[in-house]
Image (cartoon, rainbow over the protein chains, first blue to last red):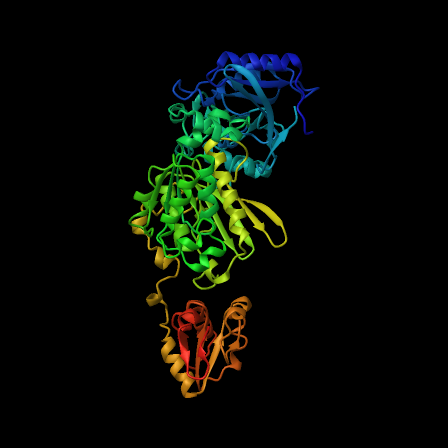
Length: 134
Length: 485
């Protein structure tokens, strides 16, 4: 697999999350199901980063992820976050926090509007990072 | 005790959501887990054995990820949770802040002058303002400095500081295209200043006609957004790298030798530094300097232009660049490759527990093997006049030339036998231990290495170095053949 398929509806949801969070970073968890590991559902996550830094950073309470895991019993396909007024490329910080095999979708929101979206996956051995087509 | 594995990490633990473990502290639990699931070890821990950033360990609802909690006893009825750390940050767009960019304005002539940049979507007004706001220090106004300084000036970098202690010599004109015949014997920084003024009088050009040492480098580069290393020796490279790390200034590195060149970006946002990739310089004398080894004229133009391009990309905040990478180019066979550079977590200058905290405390002369008096075995030598007198008197001596073939082609040393340093130990029987053997090279440094090599190989005959090398011999006039060159 070297591509990520996003339905128009999912893309719209992600865009809405990014616009709502602007000028801060928005974030979400991307869920699939056991029959189809593609992205079937998006659930917005709370950016718990201090207000002072939330324009350029995000972090999520891991207990929130745990609750979603247990409640939804869904397959976690990936995570999504936005880069307000920045390119949709991974920062060093993003790379460090990537779990191998999980899809990371990054959206660039420029002046409050969608600008670019890209997807990345870290190799299973924690080696390089590949960009996937969307 | 139950260990819950997050769905995001489960693939590395046989897809098990819960694993029963009898151990009762985090350290032992992690050891047990990685024993049972060996593939998980590489996922959980990095090469230095530190827990990777994307893993968090909770006991109940308490975060126990820090190592200090790993030996604490955990109650039997507790649940240990291996959870993902979901976090990240936006890439820094440019090394020039938005506030500084916004403080810049253009007049009509600047709009006209930089029109070709303004047309580019990735540069535009925003990028050009960043270029004008930038303060860049270029170290070295020689071969690499020539294209770097001129392209930065042409692109409109607002402040360019050039640091060089040298004067323009005739042999510089082959590759140092910022200088001309009219600049001979002038300080290079003065010559560079004139050229920059001819390109754009609005550029704030700062000339520093000083030799960089440990006691002045920090004051010379502090406060600049970027340093571009266009120096030509290892001592300067380590000094510049270390000062950039301590001053938190990104560094665009460049180097050339014969037909090959290298470019890299170091110390960008805490990324790897030059020492991470090259912890120590090669042994003194082993690698000829650019002045000894030579370089084809356009090579510094190629490498310096790439340095200037990388600098502008960092300033504007666009494109992919060589942060954590090292580009090597072979201009003879037109091949190139990019090597990845990892941060060395035990780097003496840029790691968390770095031993070097100030450049003044580090002996760069010794580190780069430049202290001749500290050689393990002192090497005796002849001055050019003493050697000339021995040759004139017909005294039986063996002269061994350890220079490269291209160096010998420029200036042959009469009656010398040629033995490369690498073959000395094997060919020591070709020398007569009953008579004096004098080693020669271009500057009298590689010949010291040759003598030490031969001594280590057990050669017992008398060995002498030609002090100052063939360069110092140029002015000697032999009675039978006139001037040497």
